[in-house]
Length: 510
Image (cartoon, rainbow, N blue to C red; front, side, top):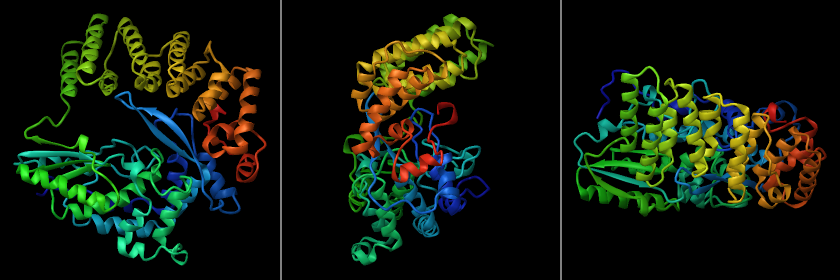
């Protein structure tokens, strides 16, 4: 069914063709190495300049390890974020740039028969942003809103997703998607390794320690690689089903009968298996329509906000107190989904709160963050900055967070507590370098180093540098950010970058 809008919406290929090969390289190298889930202290700008203007030869083609970083999800279950070495990341970015014309042609071929863009989240040029990828990005002007068209007159909706999508992707499946499994499997010898599709496969492995199973979660290169495979699946699946959309690894399909719904699940599973992927049966469900398009808890918050806006120019203490109670109840009603709190905080950003209401909100959200660690990383932007929290108060809160989570081995929360202390020129009372070293957490050790250096804690800085020297000898790649930013005298490719004053920290954290 054609969209009612008179203007033509962009195709998948339109978005891809807007990105030039050199632009792809620049943005992936500079802005695509570090996940948005990390503390916002990292940059690839100096590294990009080094690669383009100073480096005299390519990085060596050898296996590269990576940093593991545990990020808390909104349901208080952790997931592993990967941070590649800069050399492994750059080699992959350069390979994607080299073959970008072929890749855009591939994306055009696999998606040209689609009546709409099936893949709703993909790399693209974004206004006012230098990144090429943003999770949950939506642009209704360019992308349209296909769901009202595809569920019109339908009786059932299938909701399905891929089991452990990125960790399950088999790098050899990339050539299978690009040129077909038969062609790819017949061109796997040493003489065929220079073929363009095998090069992409090879450098995908290089950035993940030579492993063929799994892509790192976090780097934007993984979003490009996963789309190669997932678009191939869409290309075949869409020939039979014209009423489904995909958000990365999350599928929604609208059908007329229960039998069609069952068949979609069977066919999706069959297509996934062609690429060694599996359906997550625990999250696969069939719903009878109509159902709410938007989560019920979102409607409830919106209705509450509408009441605020209708009757008040400002929100006072008692109203924010009632609102927080309302939000806490919603969290408990939705399996402790902390997205409820985040949505509520964002919803308040354009409303005027009295001073007392602001203070109550700040204390309440901090209190919730001590129960739900998922909320700790949002405190800086949405609470401390927004409501101009006094540095003395931030110090108090940072200490509470650090003390609570260091004993629970939640090193992400501790890293952000250190960040808040650094940004507010505050002190953490219970810094213990032995505990930090024993964490084996690269980001926590780096945050501790930055904190100790800023506060002139010479003994603690020395202890961390000594430990970095130890790690340098055998486990450099797994701790490269900590080791690289701690030490001056490094050898090989690391040393050359260091001599050229490359840092991966924003200037205020160096």
